[in-house]
Image (cartoon, rainbow, N blue to C red; front, side):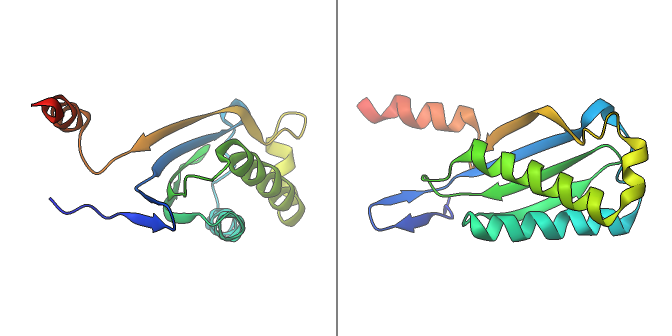
Length: 134
């Protein structure tokens, strides 16, 4: 199996993540393609500043899923917080009607789901590590 690896001057890595971020109280904010497209655009702009490659973003009415690649130096909490801060402010500014759907103008839930994704399953990786001593 051939891996798709990224490289820097002193490391080789494959760091991919799955992020799910919900609107606070699961309010249906993303019911308009213009808002969804704006969200995606803003996330792409922020990601460039953090040297992150967005592989995919999809929205449901009250949350979004994103798959992204980062480098080992990526400060993930800062990256996610920046996405939440900027998208909240900019969406409310550009689409003021969204504020009526929110509770006390809080846009994003404080919590989020984040998981690493891999190019092999955990079972395959465990077997590989187990066989290293043999």
